Amino acid sequence: MSKNRKVNRNRSAKSQRGSILPFITGLAIGLFIAFVVYLKMSAIKTSPQGIEGMPTEKDVQSGEGVPAEKPKFDFYTILPEREVKVPEWEPPKPKNISNSDELTAGRGSYVFQVGSFQKLSDADSVKAKLVMLGLPVEIQRVVINGQKVWFRVRVGPYKDPSKLDIVRRRLSSNNLDYILLRIKDDA
Image (cartoon, rainbow, N blue to C red; front, side, top):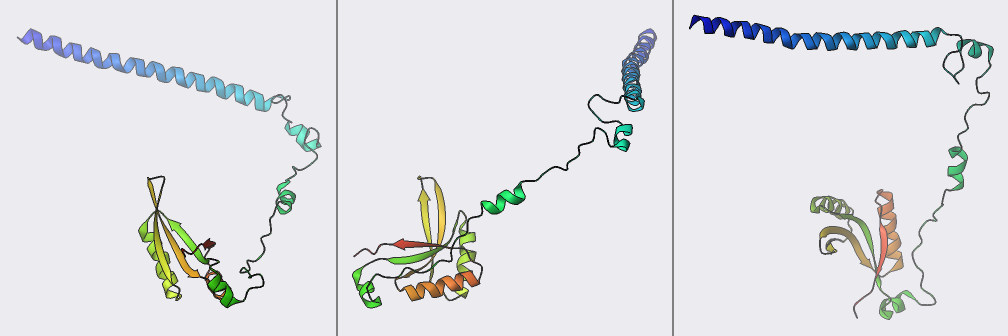
């Protein structure tokens, strides 16, 4: 039995040396390749020609081979030309109809949609802000394509153009974005 133990010890020592040898060989090859690349790069930097197409230090100092113009940035001129100015919103004015006639004529009502959210909690927080402003607010649940649920925050409805203007100013002064929507009365 003592012979078997000695044989096992010799095998384990040989296997450890065998696994170190490929590692050292790979390390030596990698270092050699890195050294050759370093020598080539330093030769390119010190050669008078430099890299083809690139100006050398001599060219830079003398001003040869360096672009004469600075790059032009056109977006400074393009963007102002493409700016679209949106006029301030004005409430719709009835055509030759007094306010009392408009209310009885069934022309429809208007609501301000202040937001549309996928989470009810987000819609609730906007509703709370609008309630603090003293506006009549409702959250409308809408299912789109039978899959997605959205919660619309709406203020209104309003029929009177002067009330529309008051609410519009109140929303704008509180930095709230909105969309004015016309809804038809069911009458």
